[in-house]
Image (cartoon, rainbow, N blue to C red; front, side):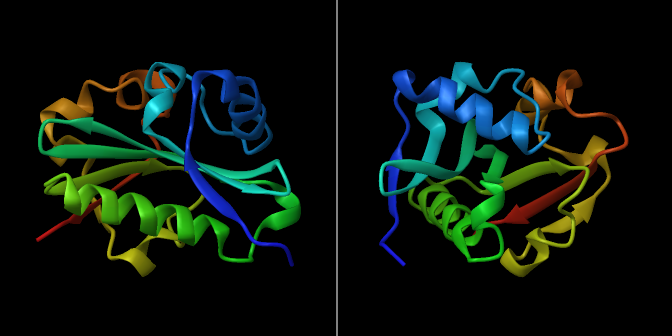
Length: 146
């Protein structure tokens, strides 16, 4: 397998990101506004994965974790999430929150735990995902960073 390159997204990559998110049944609301918060995985100039970390004070929202269907189960999603967790630590973010309707079994391997939605930090609750992009039935999870 050819090597995978992880890089920060640029505005001209939005259409590819949007397509991957739509194919993965993930919301687009608010994502383009945070294009610079995305990390992308490329293999042979093909976008195979993405994830974003929207910062809200000393908290952040992990969102839009998606891997192209042909590349799922090969660790690319894990690599993207690990990179964003490391970035959060270096940026002195203390809590990472996410909403999910389908991947609640994926995130505990990184230390994420389920919390009541109302316990998410206030800034994160102002994000597009909390304001309606994700349904109220979505599971809320958080990771406390040292």
